[in-house]
Image (cartoon, rainbow, N blue to C red):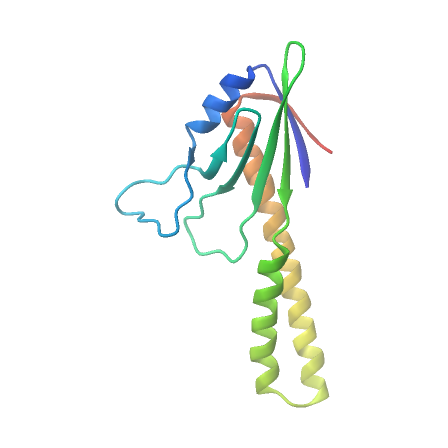
Length: 150
């Protein structure tokens, strides 16, 4: 999924606004000690790579990569959300193997494949929801004027 956000902020103002809501990546997060920021990742002068901080356990985490493009009078932020194929495939294989090892006839194989398809559909839906939620949060942070899908 790709999005384009136009804003009246300068590139430095965009970077500063995003920096206020981004923290470095951590492996173990202590939610009781301090409140996490909205995103984790890193930001450079012209691009950023971030991921929403999940306050709940989730098998799918969407990476958002963005480029800040200067135009005359306004700036554009191009955002692309990368699809977590490996997460979905690994979790689907583990669940399918667990189900397959407990059944041994052909009818149960059809049921297992159906469950695998359902897992894929839910994973895809979670990806779309997370990508659009991240897009909307970035839109609010950088005070965007318009959003378009590209």
